[in-house]
Image (cartoon, rainbow, N blue to C red):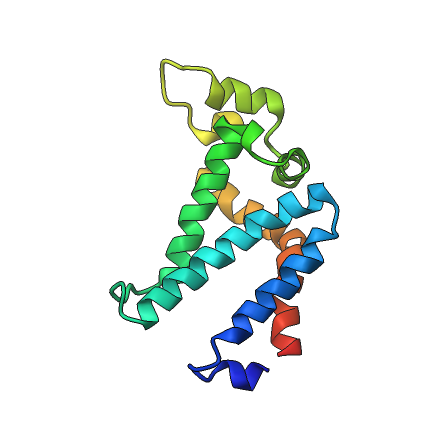
Length: 160
């Protein structure tokens, strides 16, 4: 099917793939479906932009995928900091666990309540240099994220 899917006339292959995925997710737990929805929306928007671009409906935009990822990540971060009730509770709690620095109290104090001045991140999360902390945080979280996202991106490469 993969080779056939490269043929422009094989429009029915993504339809079948979506149907199978939809049926499989319909028997999954409701909380898990909501968490998967965050990833599905990101992939769907990416596919939509690629398809519209391929058919000349929108102009070619360099680095479309990273730009879309940044926009969608920004929406998720906005929800985490200002509108947590819009996210599945399990996803919100997982982000708090992964972040290592944010707590419900800190998010409320620094983001959800009005303030009179800008508060730099070294008051919220770390002492010292923000650049040094960014390198430290990247290195300390790398293995955690590789366990999650490495699997998500490696399995399709291996299978297909």
